[in-house]
Image (cartoon, rainbow, N blue to C red; front, side, top):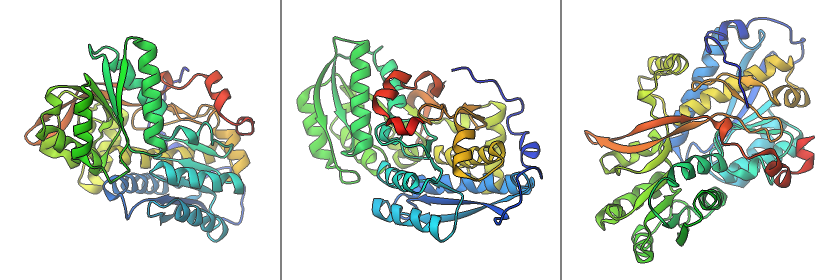
Length: 405
């Protein structure tokens, strides 16, 4: 998929959000109902909130979207799918929001997506990686921003296939994200390396990993390499126990999300060296679009952006450009306008592919290293999401026909 470059990617804001052509209606603002797990996953969701707040401030300061300011109604879902669904319904019925947006984990993202479909309300799933959001449980009204588990597994399998390792073990949290990550990685690695053998799988419950037992079982399987999809506190416990037992001196590791700053801040001086990871080397990216974003973020928060910051910021830009293009906040018009349209991100232009409404936003692939008690990515490259999307035939086999109409 070819994407035309956007010149001066963020200079367009002043032009894009000027008074214009949306017809007068009863809503003087564009209302966004934003939902996330602030109380249960602040290390990931607070940077994301800072990102969307920055974008809202910038757009409103530039005159809004075609003269209409953005108003965000933010709610906490407590990482509970039932609470997420209830909050989404309340935002639609009570606050009369024009768009739903946000969520972090797959369970809450899928719950809000179902509410969006039932109420025919546009939903931008910002953080969830679950393939089900755009495939098996996809619907006409849900668009996904982050690169999916399928896409990130493809990026890691591409690198893992180059390793001499033949015996692989799997470690992932036992819910849809982890199951999908493992299934995709195994399939893609085996396609590249038919000689690969999968010797063990460990499935700890999210935030309840028994690291000692996991590491013992992995050692017993005698793998040459491990695919890891744990993150946050589970990743931290796994790394500390693995280091204590000398596991990582024996095996190579490919780790989904392992290079994201949110995880590296948790690991600190325990960051393992040599792991292949997907992540975000924020302080090393010097493209004009990213430099402009990172500078604005630091000026506002006196801190460097995290991957969540990028996602929150881009989520608002995508919604704003969708409303501008549709010249409306009507969900049907927004869906039509946003299928296949290009929008700006700090990582460069991206597109919501029409067939599955998955963004082509990519991520970075590199190697973990450590210096002065802090982990960082080295030898990294930007993996353009457009190159790692599932092909359209695969999408048609898995995505409901009603979601493609």
